[in-house]
Length: 448
Image 1: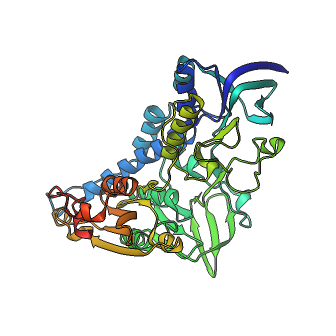
Image 2 (image 1 turned 45 degrees about the vertical axis):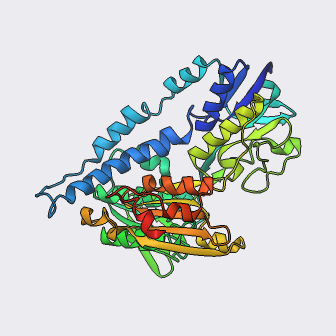
Image 3 (image 1 turned 45 degrees about the horizontal axis):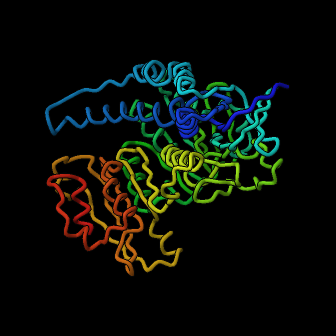
């Protein structure tokens, strides 16, 4: 076994890990980045970027269909092959990370391919290499798709998000198992490319982590677009006959050409060697402080910290760790204004706490909401303008602790609300601000 010494080892080069390794290297530290798959991680190859590329194309088809009755007439013919080609050529380089790897090495970091595992204090083993870190180790090992233990499922050629975004054609029919953000985004995308889609959710509603109003909105929109939505539908059996899947739930069976399993993500926490240094890895996340430290030489960022499975969280934490390692000071982590967007159409943007979370936290809650469709821009859009703004207010302090912005531009409209939660802008001050007319975000004024 060969041994080398460096300043910092970054295990896992998803967006946060890649950015951190490059920043530390450019600051003059000796950095080794360890990656078992592709430099850049899930986001650019199987997540955020290719999925949003496909979703944008699907939404463009929907916009074309909206021409009728508003601006003339149009006939839209979907072709998923165009999207598949763009994903391969423009987004993923056909799942080749040569460019990303060169970018990392050009920063001065060294790339080591393989699975990194902690084997002792400041020691990481990668295959037949032992790497010792003078300053410490950063874990950014991400997640894998969760596959539930449903009878028969493991023996079938089901899709996860990876296969769904590597497909070259839209299936004639598709079952989506799971009503979270990933499942709903891909369900609507494929439906708009012509697939007959059924969503099956074991829980009482889709979009479980978000406001119930958001779940009701998306379920209604899906039904209007011909997407079947079944809740309280725990799957009991899955089979595949060589051509089609059959999934059983309750007294019902549904058949489709493809099955997408989108029932959540599991953090890669058990295989990184935390047991060798006495760190608890029995849960779904590793405990960190407000500087993302696990101990005095180990940091963790991204999905395994349990602070939100979003690229922007990993990037945020990477900045905190970089400043900590480089003794640059600056603010500690603050997740109170954590924002997220489900890129369905309408989009569901949310920040901070839901109403229920705020009540559970003992906050004296006041809520207020307004309908996007009746907003100043909503009536201009005429069709497919469903949505709402919901504010969750700490009545004692007079500030927002959470908000949801659902609508055609829900993710972008969220920006003002996210800043209000982060900066604790008094609701009274927000009421007296000037809101541009006619915009969707002017509906915030109506909600206030």
